[in-house]
Image 1: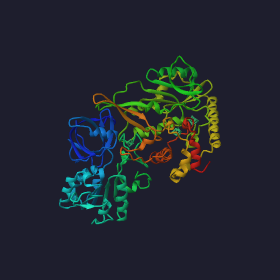
Image 2: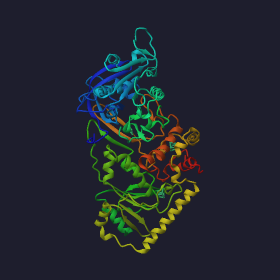
Image 3: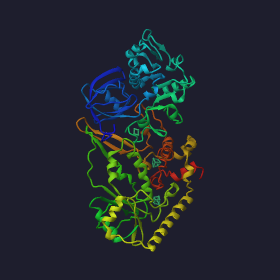
Image 4: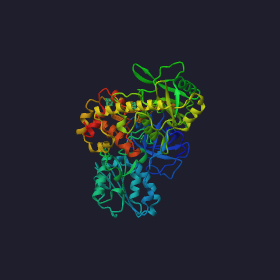
Length: 276
Length: 341
Ligand code: SF4
Ligand code: SF4
Ligand code: FES
């Protein structure tokens, strides 16, 4: 990273595949002109030429250096254009930015990962990284929630995880319309956190999802007597420069782009607007 | 320290033009603005007070192209380096904040860096103060004490020159014959002027009941509620002038122009007072109300920077007081925050 001459310049990158995940979510597989690596939890800025850029946390396995995947929900001007991209289009990327998940710290410990909504994207990359060190983890638990079965991101892959040995997985949706659409839990994601078989005074919990979901999960974990310093949240802020200069992503004394976007709960809990 | 007669100062500045673009304050309609030095003119005001525009404008430009197409390197900015003459103590404090933002940690800003590394700063003592000057409430004196290459104390027919860096020393060496020895009378004149200006600023502080810097600590945390900030923000029209005119405000927006064949990324000054400043793409806005954004502006200056840099990001220059169409007065807000007013 240190040899980037101009932190605002982008690397030319080819769209090699576009996967439609749900009606509002697509995954782009991107091949940068030069090898590109990131640590799980770090984010990139993706530029649509002439339109602008937006921050995304890759959803692919950080072990791959030729291609990265970003999973993107259509929510605004830039993401609208991103959804119109086709195979072989050129885009630009910058990064990676931010500090990522402290994987080393998790080794030898029990780790609970909770993902919700489009928050699954970064969580998938994290899970790949955790699978890679699974022999060094005491236990790995995954809990996933979504509004309904149709919008469940990476559904097939996650269902695959439920059959994986040594992995404790539960999936839930808020609501099912048609019987037979869904063979797993129904209810808010907080309702599938009660049965965690981990030592709550020592286990780590990683929460990634919409602010409201993170707020309630954090509350839940604290009720379950997880330690504040063992909770990791990934904060969605208006990241622009990615390098702690433009001022857009401040949370208290931190910049989400530089000191986050993954934060230990106790370091940011005193800021009133973290859930906004 | 040396003495430099006025006509010799003019020659030195003329000589500096060979290697620098020399900017110097000039008075227009009773206000000082920076202008390119020319040895044909002699209407400059090196002393007096800070100029209208903040010095950041020279280094972190209001609008600048920062990337082009897929070019990895910063396009070379091969203009002559800058020499700024007549920067005031409060201007130099502004650099402290901007340097921290743009030069520290792993990603330094290549545009700011190239301008700043090669610049020559010839600061000057203030010879008067505006009614809005309150630098002394923020730990400064109205004359530069450090962070300059050369500092000038303008006297009646010349100036005293203090050397602050090797670069400054080189300037003196290269023009050795023009510099003279300092007399006791010169020194006394300088002290007299400095005393007079300090009294002026102190009187400002007393008249406007501006709190001491030490009492600002944690004040925003203690007054975080809308009950305090709503009345403060009541008249604000969200113009952003307070941000753009501020020597310490550094926030910017990146935006792209062109199309897939030819694109340019521009960096423009941004304002945290504007509604969408912190809004995320999904629509959530952590600071939807104007009073929250006003509070944020104070938080950044008086909480954030003290924590990360150890100084308040306010220089006491008073520019925002003059610029605000809603007459929101930082001195008064600070007074009320500390229970002083
Ligand atoms: S605030 Fe102080 S240093 Fe700045 S112009 Fe006024 S008197 Fe001079
Ligand atoms: S200059 Fe005054 S009116 Fe304009 S944004 Fe700042 S506080 Fe509001
Ligand atoms: S994105 Fe610019 S400061 Fe964080």
